[in-house]
Length: 361
Image (cartoon, rainbow, N blue to C red; front, side, top):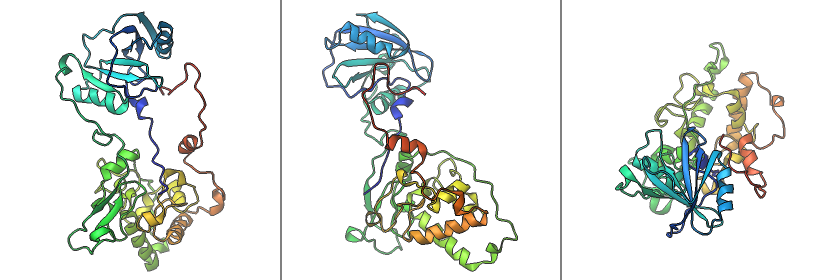
């Protein structure tokens, strides 16, 4: 398998997450070395966290507090808990324990507050006040809305009327991943969870390109073109891309192109999408499986997984040609992209200096 499921900076999305915390051990010290009032990164509301136990010196606690915006350090005092919904206990990479007193101002209920702590901030939650008796939830990845669901190979019995699968005991085996594909001729959404796929890759509805093939284009009367388009459609429907590019599977509407688009559905794609599909843009960093592990579908160097990558490439090169786009319009030896993924993939970490960390923006 050569898929690269990159993590989004989900911790940075949390109103309360700070630093690079880890789940703490069961023992939470009673001693409060100090507390820190500061402005949260996204809501501009005041938050408070406490530094617990003798592993902290007062100086270390002050320094940790200074990493927050508009900070105010208080020695040996606890945070105000009068309106708090819970505590989120975390620890530094050195094992020092601290806890954030969660007082969300966005209307979050007890379950949502716990989710922020345990899924996003990777802490241990304890309810306070109105949430003191809240039922503890076991938030493994995927059980909370929006959490990254790990890639798994699932093997299911074929749908009624379909032939036996190529998996054990005639099952159909499919990776629940954006680069995963079920067996050729079957629909991905019948054999894998699109909800899982959308947790692994950001999804949102987006308008189509607006391009329309002119009515006098000879392609309308070209039977070979329609044969190829039908083949491309079945290939796409067998793979995880369909989860965001079909009116049947995208919960809030397709993200740009979609296979039910009227006329020639590839018209709904932007030029950049066509270029990626033709292999003119190197999208390998978005991840792919070896064809042997992916029911014969290969995406190494191409936008769409396919059982016949050269045939797929030829079709999309034809689509670019219909729009007047030439191969020379794109670099012949492109750098891997997208750029924001390349930055992460090739980044070489260094030791952080004081005050450095995850940027709030």
